[in-house]
Length: 259
Image: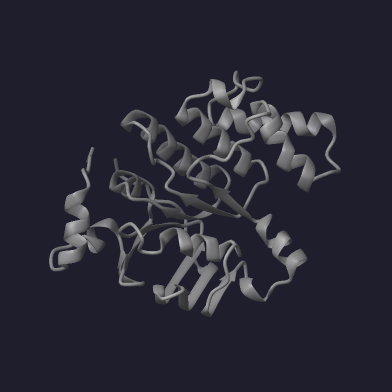
């Protein structure tokens, strides 16, 4: 499965990270990380467990503060924003959690309506229903609006989580292990939706994944974390080219399906 080319504006940097450091007690996780995300681009972040991938996206979203360095998102330096400014910035960022994070006591439609009403209180009932129907159609769950999360499969929950994120029309998407725990067919469905969403909603995305099939199929560029930094960056072929033993170990650990 190969990624189709998309339009990327390298003159428009939507995320800029420079000299990023983050430690927890005596554990140094990020050690001078640099990365740019361009408008319309999907960047896949790869690395071993504990390498700092999830820490990175939490820093981007302002859920953690860096020890030093800068993170600019949509031109704003994230850790310099006050609570109100940070909330406004987060409306531009969609975060798909690994576990989907649905409200178990709400139907699918209610899960989608909740962030919409909370953040866009002036919408009419008709406009709300239209938005919900559109995103449900996008994730191919038009007939699941009245179901409870307990009635959904793991893949369906992931798709509802994606719909709930996209309903606010974010400019930037952060995906945390979007295919984790899914079978190959369902993973393929999520991969397709990530790529379709990139084109339809014109999102720019950071995708955290261990799944190299997902990485190859969704990433316009790869960035491999080694020892707290991005030591290899480029296309899939460039990152996993001969000559880097650690990159080769990461590659060999994964099973790649190439069609």
